[in-house]
Amino acid sequence: MIQVYLVSFTIALLVAYFLTPHVRKIAVQAGAMDAPDARKVHTQPIPRMGGLAIYAGFVLAVFGSLYVTHEIAGLLLGGTLILAVGIIDDLYQLPAKAKLFGQILAASVLVIFDIRIEWLTNPFGEMIYVDFFSIPLTIFWVVGLTNTLNLIDGLDGLAAGVSVIASITICLVAIQQAFPLVAIMTAALAGSALGFMRYNFNPATIFMGDTGSMFLGYMLAAISVLGTVKSAATIALFVPIVALGLPIMDTTFAIIRRYANGRPIFKPDKGHLHHRLLAMGLTQKQAVLLMYVISGCLGLSAIALTEVNTSLALLIILALLSGAVIGAKKIGVLNDADSIKSH
Image (cartoon, rainbow, N blue to C red; front, side, top):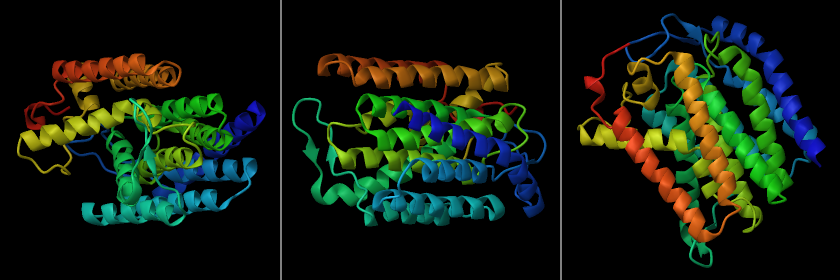
């Protein structure tokens, strides 16, 4: 069975690797260029929309490794819709409300195809069934994770690398829990993001754009929900939450920071974790590699959570949360972004 995961991973990796240079040409011709500004780190226009290569790698790997069921069709349809929203945004810079509407629409596709969160893990006993909260909870989860990965896409190779680590983490847990569908799909997601990274790591020649970051966030969220649909004994939502702990915490701190300083929550700033690391004197590569290490540690913690008893699992989660808060205070991600010098 391991062979199927490797086939899925390899197909996705090769397709994304060989297709990205062609996508780059298309992006340049279409005028999908990311111009530098005060908030961004790059200093010259770079083509975006690289998510097209990630999407192609993932979809071809899924078709080559799985029989397309009703649920997989829904997942691919929703993923295609979020990709379309990303393409339009990369070309024309959609208003925040229009982008959010597109994300809600794409999340609703999952609900229509009966891919929804129907229960939550209760560490102290039986599962909690959410009943009629199932639909809003599913949409909130998918839209939230889609934006979380989108917001962390601020340095060369960062979103792609974090996605690879999170995908591999979920894949390993799914193999461990004997759920091949989730394992094969996350292997494909990891492969496509890794194939793209060859061109996206510093110095990047192409960005994934919202086309890629929203697609990766959406697929990680959707595949996780698919895992909860199939069996209560399989992959639970806390695994992707911990595996994606870095972008989730960064987004949470951004909301707190903006609210505390009386700024619009959805207005971009230079107070994100990667901005703070650069302000501390780290190079782009050093900052990204450090964030890979943090994501890797969170990934190992997520795997450990599935192997230990409830008391130890709660201690691990408490330690992770304490470490995040202490780290955030030391680095200064809760400080007013306007007080941070531009780079």
